[in-house]
View 1 (cartoon, rainbow, N blue to C red):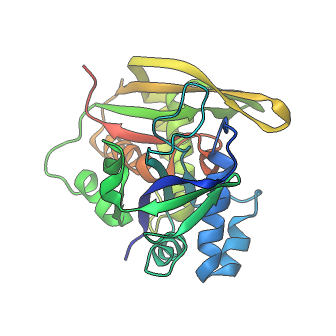
View 2 (cartoon, rainbow, N blue to C red; view 1 turned 180 degrees about the vertical axis):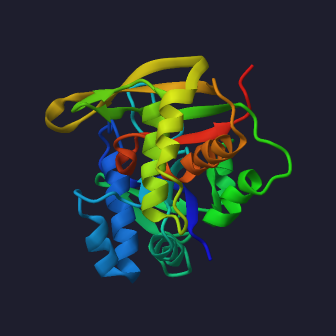
Length: 280
């Protein structure tokens, strides 16, 4: 069963539609995902629209080469990533990619009044196809939980889109270990068939630190002409008190970030994240 899904769509802009530059495509991507789900499961789409619940999906900003003023370039193919981490949402998105589905090759989709044609994945810009994958929770976690070799005491996460965390009623664009892994643990325990112990939270708070990083802040347009400040880059996390079991869970959560995103606003393009090899 596919429980974790990451689709990367290749989108080519069409002449018809809005020509004005769009500062952030995350909300439009969110709306597209809901429309794609509704095509096969309208009740599920209504459930996912509930902003008060923890949502089992994430989306990216529109990715690719833009004109200096932020306008789309007609000759370019852009990438858009949609992820799901609950089986019914995975199935609905996969159905939308089948022939005749809203996200199938050759279909036309709309993002913020701009029309695009869905192109073959082979036309994706370089390096974007590596963000596509599908698996199960068991397959994702087993390399860490069932491995004969102990997990590393270090892991490195790439924050590929602006990332911020809600802390004490405020947004904090800083990947403190407790914020990163508590965010991942909350989503894992909400949707995975087997929950991780709540003590995982305590281990991340008391035993993990940021050992190296290369981060910078980046603003994202918010509602009512506001700005939300996120951070992009990478950070390496290390343990002060190595424990094989707890670090196995931490590494599994780090790998889960590829599908779930991390922090606030992942359903609107923020918090795209993945586990990477230790940076040089």
